[in-house]
Length: 120
Image (cartoon, rainbow, N blue to C red; front, side, top):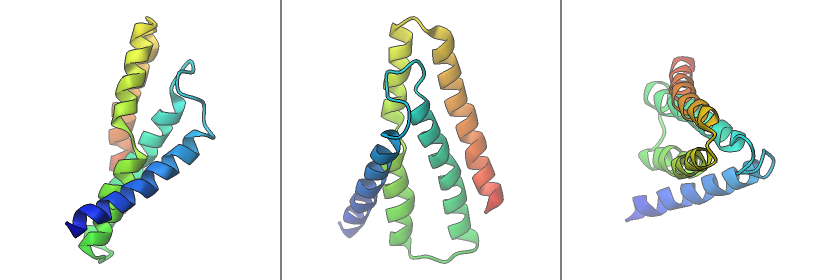
């Protein structure tokens, strides 16, 4: 049960951080959902780096990994908003933008995670 509380605490911090960062970026519903795209790319880069470095070089407690990796990063990134914004683009018949958003989210997200992995 303690692990759940640690993940929840990290999630609250991650969600709050995302909210603050999103308020500085273009709003949801704009021509292109750049804010969520950038946040998810940052999360992919960070998680690729964090989970690799904490297994290879840094010895941190498993609960701290839960707080930061699962809780914070899970709360910071947002797959649900990505899905919803993709649907909004499709409903507005902005198929090219939707395709660009979906493809760049997945491809750049995987590349960012790989870069994070390599940098660690």
